[in-house]
Length: 346
Length: 281
Image 1 (spheres, rainbow over the protein chains, first blue to last red):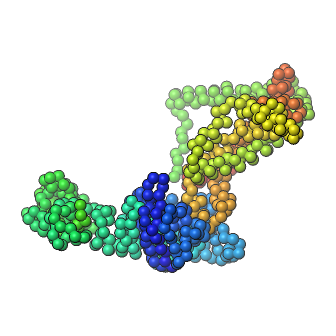
Image 2 (cartoon, rainbow over the protein chains, first blue to last red):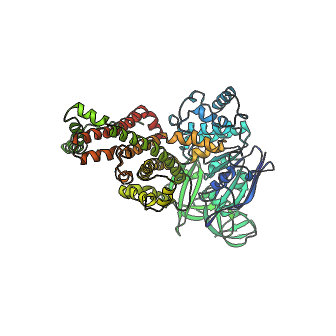
Image 3 (cartoon, one colour):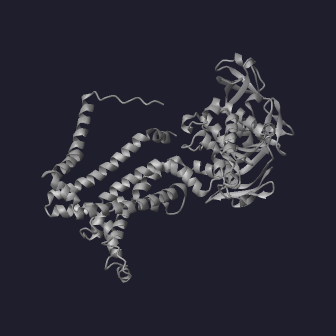
């Protein structure tokens, strides 16, 4: 049950929304399409759903040409950021819709539909709210109904377009876990579009990173994190600090100290190197970049510091709450030493 | 979310504004309406009944209702189709179509009538051909209908377009991905979502269609008992200094307008919850 996308290109009047995009979603996989707005991820989703046609390329599902099928025939369950629930129907009617519109020869009996709706209500834990209208539900509840409605047609693929975009942070996190559990229970191949890197890394088996209509990297969350293929991927996955160093082999040489370097390709000589906030070591008397503490703020499990060097560069670093960093005060002078840097070329 | 009920006005300025608004409504709406009834019954009930039961009046009432009964459904279908096109598709000439939709609002009704004379009149472009095939358009029912259709063209579409833009296409797209065919999408999703705006547009359209004077006056030919609608019949009576009959007939027309208004209010009251739910969503 795998979906293969090959060399998809799609242009809108004068700009290329998708440029030669190829990837595969394995059977039962949870795949995230990650990218900033304008990267083409929603265009890609619309093509997969059959709401738009590509200029060239192919989409096949288990060898079947998907592009030859219209949106109705593809049996793709779609979940929207706006929920798109039918406002004049109850929760039960919403969920049953996909079964009720089937031609009479394929339509399950009323009792079967009812049983299916009940089992889905149970799955989304809204058994008591079947008679409610969408306007009487919270955002999180609405999105769960939308998912149940999409699952009702036993979709071959589930497509989710920024499904948690309109929800607040707590509900979002909760629903994320829940969505992953539903996916593991139903085993349906799921493709998930998001611009939120944390969400993508947290949920997906594999992540496809898109930039300007092209694929930057495909990989498991840890691979993306440990071996980012480009500076774009590195920057997009989290905060980064940039400095210059002389690179030779797997080492970056700074003024008075060195750090191990993850180098993509054969790069030597003066280069821009990047390091993560948590790959930084602080000390009172060097070596490192001399800086002044601008701010100390809690960031979840860590302390987040902002340091300004003498030439004006601002570094962001993260440390455990019980580390030496917690003894620092504003305007203290401290040395920042990267303990691991990434090099992608200039 | 509970909305705080507005308070009764307290400051002198608020009371003065309210008083002015009430005075103005009384002056320009209530007074003329009361005057119509007063003039209609000035000489008693018998002359009133005689005026409205006279064969020409009856025929004018029937004709007015018939024209509205044909023109309004036509414009309802057109309005839905136009609103669908404009809100669901991107195409060249969309701006032009939107402007053309507004044309009947800005065009003098006299012109909306005259164009049909120029096209279908005895000396019009198609006049000779129509005459040869014995088809009558102007000075007959078809002329009245097309003139009314033109004048009331925007009402339904104008009600639907903002609502359909606001609701977006996600629900329809969801329905398609769930396997719904075109007509299923329309009858199960689109139509239920627009039914109140549609009803409202149809009511407005009906009121306007029944009251239309200018365009209809041009294409009618004022043949008593045949092509005179209610507004035209009233004018004829008025020009003959038959004041009581003119106002009696006018009261019928005003009555039709008030019935339309009551229907609209009843709908709003009866389905307040549903209307609110649609807006809130």
